[in-house]
Length: 269
Image (cartoon, rainbow, N blue to C red; front, side, top):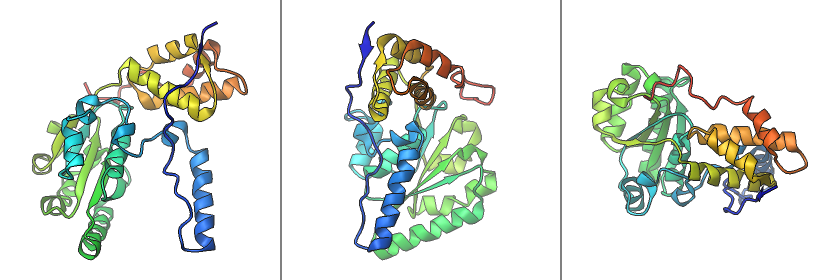
């Protein structure tokens, strides 16, 4: 039976070591390493910079719009728009890792105006005291009310912070016109099969496993362009196969536990 072994370079966490702060920093670093090791596979594989991003080459390929803006440190506020699992959060983290700006993250599901104002205040302090800009990644920005979105406007307009909003909804309907007009829209596409295969290879490498070609092909065929769900299914398949290689039967069983088809809450189309 044909076998598939990962050949692509792995993408791991930030890998921070201890700082000069003493014993407490050593404990903090050790705790961070343990947390990272226990994180879901999709989280462990998140890239640190644009070069590690899988897919979205129309945005991050050589000479493409988003890459050029980041490389020239001219990125203003942006909206990442696309289906689930296309890497909106991943891309925001990679953008932050490719710049010298600080990174803050909020979810519109749980955050309110108070949280936004606190981020803006920290961004002002950071810019004034250290001359360092701030990227605010706001996941599911479409869930913010008009008043909540309006609270971001002054800081976005004067450059206190760079907003990156992520949404599965059409921003022309769900993002307030004043905020949208101050943001560049970047549309993320479902991952191509070759990109999915690259993710699978990296996932297998991170798990220290190999897999049959049949198992990989079946998983890639069922992915539907959703990188996060394919890595979730792969992680389950690796657990089922432990300690051996991943076979087709493991992938089929794992897919039975994974929602790889878009549901009614996905309004991207």
